[in-house]
Image (tube, rainbow, N blue to C red; front, side, top):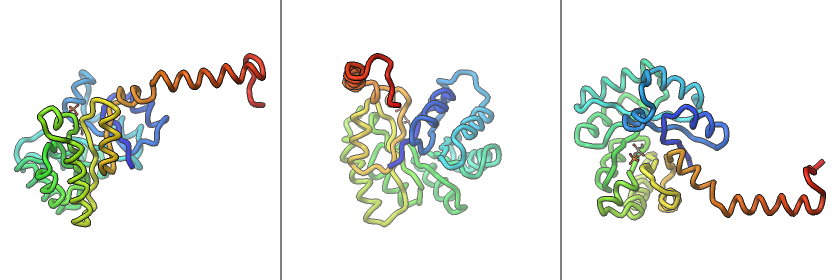
Length: 224
Ligand code: E4P
């Protein structure tokens, strides 16, 4: 299982790269917009500096045609590094770009996946990761758990090396469901991680242990 952070926020990346077994960071233009007036390449270099090269960094192309997408990919590789995963929307031109990028041996993440068929095409095109949009699928009446299970099944049937990095989560339950349905990876915004670890029951359990310890060994006593 891989847990990635779906953010470009430097503070959150620093925090969770230190605190969690983080596998990488995913970004897209909407995520970058939240960071305000940034200098794109230096911001991405800073993220790489924090996460190192053992974790994956997924950066999206912005061109709308195949040649432009391939050019974006080359620019990202030149300006950033050769290890980055090029995120390409799995639409008609995107799938064509994915095929070309994979024929050159580049790392590719097929994104904006809303349907099983889109996923099957991206798997066949050799994408390293496919990113089904869990919450957005549910919003338009597509059952994300069932779709992810079918994608996982297709990967297994075709003995493909593609991994599912499920994305677009709005709550913790969606994240665990995606993993249970066969996603090998999930990319999660910092507020979802915070939500998951801020359950009142966790805080209460920790507090109860502290009170019981102090009742035996006295206030401020430590294991020593
Ligand atoms: C990540 O790769 C996706 O682009 C992202 O999770 C989409 O999330 P959203 O539906 O919250 O915009």
